[in-house]
Length: 118
Image (cartoon, rainbow, N blue to C red; front, side, top):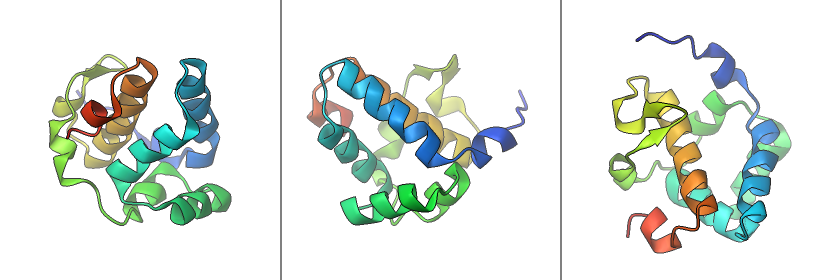
């Protein structure tokens, strides 16, 4: 199935980020845990993550400039937004959905070690 992902790719990471924070905190998780998940996936450190948020980059730029996508990203599987993460063909959309999946697992109370595929 072909999807037009342009709109998602152009969304500002900073506009979605507060929703990630709210989702995590609503379920008793912390912003620090959320950041640990983002750092693990993208390689951004705290300062670089804050800079990306402050610059208002879109998802395409956020992932294009990520210092290092975690080599264990292939271990992220399951369904998010009705799609199997491992079956999403577009590499950028897969990264975005992997992030969604990790935030989802965090909000569902999964242990951080398990989320980070340790």
